[in-house]
Length: 69
Image (tube, rainbow, N blue to C red; front, side, top):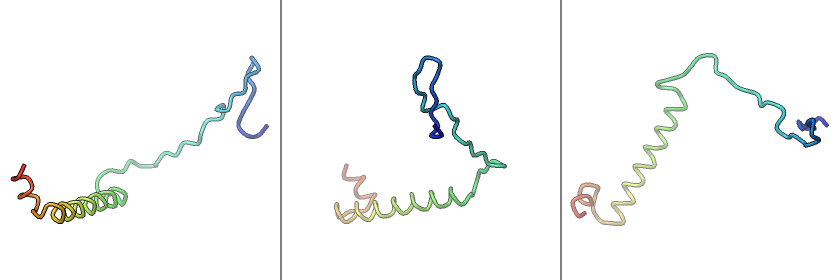
């Protein structure tokens, strides 16, 4: 059986006997990485569209909506 399963000493099949491959980056990344920039840009787009939707639904901007609460 080459599917990654083995039979242990009690006759039970162990499907998780093979360790998964680990991917380790050669150097740690922090700061302005391409992934962080894409993630922040997407969050900004979601926030901007949410504010536009709030204004269309309530008829007020963010400050007006917070004042009416």
